[in-house]
Length: 411
Image 1 (cartoon, rainbow, N blue to C red):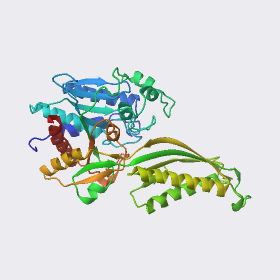
Image 2: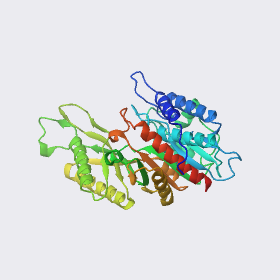
Image 3: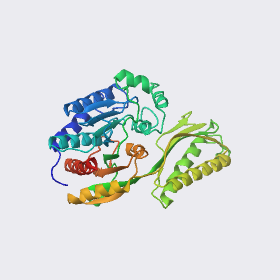
Image 4: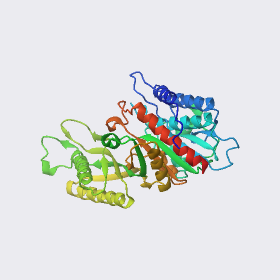
C-alpha cells in the first residue's frame, strides 16, 4: 500500500502559486467567494485540471469538479476528494487549498503510475466554504448535498450587496450542471488541522472521526441612551453592559462544560458609540460549537434562558437571529479505520480527532460515507497569514491520501 509517493515539489509549488492569487495592495490574501480574485484562483485551478487531462464540470452554484474517468462519468459512483479555494480576509495559503491541490496531486500521481481505478476519481472545489461574503458558510457543499435549495443560494446577498448568482455569471462560473449530479461512493477531505493538538503531541496524522455542531447567532441588545455622568448605575438600561454579561456568560459556560464546548463573540458594536453616552444598542455575534447534538441543544436553551433573565433584570430588550446551524457529524468509521491503516503502513504516528472547525466534508457526509485527514498546523494558527504547515508534513498527508485513494477507488 505504501509503494509510490506524490510529487512534493509540484504540490508545494502549486500551493504557493495559488497562495499568491488575490493579494491586495497591502499584500494580504483576500480571495472571497465569487469575486474577481476568486475568478483568478478558479481559472488557475481549472488550467491545472486540464493540464492533468481531467474532464472539468461546473454546477449551478459554481462548484468545480475535475473528473478522471476512462469510461464515462456514470459508469460507477466516483471517489471524491477535495475542499475549497475561497479564503477569509487576510488569509493564510493552506486552509482549503491544500485539500483541493492534494486531491489533484493524488489523481496525477495515480495516472502517471499506470494505476487503473475501478471507479472514477473526482477532485472537488466547493463554492463559498468560508461564508465571509455570502451566508451560510459551506454553501457550495450544502447545496450539493441537498441541504439548501440552489435558487435560494443563488439569490443570497453578500455583505457588499452583491447577489451570488449574478456574481457567478460575472466571473464565468455559473455552470450548467445540477448540484449533486455526481453522488460519490465516498468522500475524503485532507486539511491542515487549524489547531494545536497534532503539533503539541508530536503526531503526524489525524484521523478525523467527528465534527462539532455549530450554532451562529446575531444578538441585538436594546436599552436606553443616557448621560454617562448623571445616570446612577442602578437606574441604567445599559445595552453595553448587557452585551458584556453575555460575553462573560459564554466564557464561563465553556470553561465549566463537561464536553469540549467553545464559544466566541467575534463581532461587537455599540451605539451611539460615544465616550460619554450609555449605549442604547449592542449588536454581537455568537459562535458556539459542541460535538454532541443533545449538548448543543442544551447550551442553546441555556443561553436563551440566561438572556431572558438578563433582559428582565436590566430592563433590556434582546432579540436573536439565527445565522447558521449545523448538527455535529460522525464520520464513517470504516473510512476512519482505512486512514489509520494507511498511516500505520507508512510508519506514521496517528490519532483519532474531533474537528472544531466546519468543513465541506460534514455536508457531503449526509449523502455519502465521508471522513477527513488532518496534518499539523504550526502553533495551531489558521485564518491568519501566519498559518503554516511544514512542507514535509504537507507531503506526508498527501501520501496518506494517495494510499487511501488507491484502496477506495478499487472497492
